[in-house]
Image (cartoon, rainbow, N blue to C red; front, side):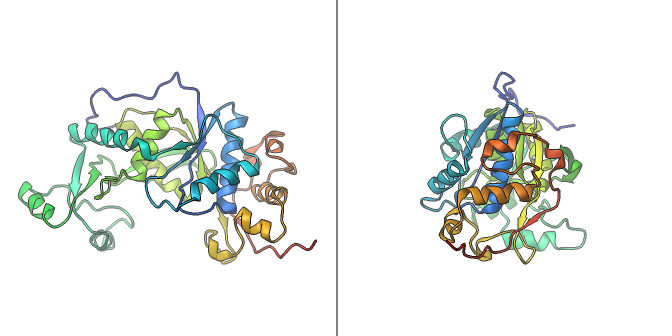
Amino acid sequence: MFPSQPASPPRYDAALPPAGRFAPSPSGDLHLGNLRTALAAWGFARATGRKFILRVEDLDRVKVGAAERNVADLAELGLDWDGPVDYQAPRIPQFLGEVRRLTDAGLTYECYCTRKEIHAAASAPHGIPGAYPGTCRDLSEQARERRRQERPPAIRLRADVHEFSVHDYFAGEYTGAVDDMVLVRNDRTPAYNLAVVVDDAHQGIDQVVRGDDLLPSAPRQAYLAGLLGYRAPEYVHVPLVLGPTGARLAKRDGAVTLDELHALGYTTRDVLLWLGQSLGVSRTLNTTADLLRDWNPGAWNTDPATFTQWPEKRA
């Protein structure tokens, strides 16, 4: 199924206790959609006897103080996790080491394309929207040397398939596109798809619960996991929270964070009640522990929830 794999891969350690995780990027405060996904991920982990890891994915787009506020909001909601909060950035050398293994096996190549060039190529007839068309895949060494003078390269995977299938708890069998994804950006920062696969494998994450906007990335990540000698996790992609316009919930939709809702007079319990109702949980959630009573995610809503601005709560 896979092309030549890296030698002596540090395979998934079956002795690690199985775990789930929530992995926010500290680019801003968590909104109701993020909190809803975190609650679902915590519930799946606790209900199935898994550890629950809180991992801050801080490789880029870090806003000062956001990570601390994210952690505080999750704790205020009533979530707990095993061990200290984990931060991704200190593992950059490990991620780059995994890319070297792939490179030694002939499974990467340098890419010099700009975003504009990639967009133009993907928009051409027969192009796959959003997928890299392989422009730099088979450049001659002379062409590579010439492009190196223009800009530093990113490192891409040399994929051997165009699509891959995974199983998702809610979506069932899902087949998605696999392209020559970026592994290391041209500023030498490991890319999300690489870091998340490596971290999940090395932390015993065998269950990934996240928003269903990330479902299309699951086949890419499962394929990459196989190349690296890792076992892909179980996937659970929960429906998103949408704003009043039908787009994914965002700050522009009004008071959407815990602090903003508190300022309108709403308590954390009010927020928890809304989260439970939006998921379609049969039991009223007064605490997070209530989510685990009568646990039946198969009966949850499979359509997106819609948030409309809450009015100021009168005393």
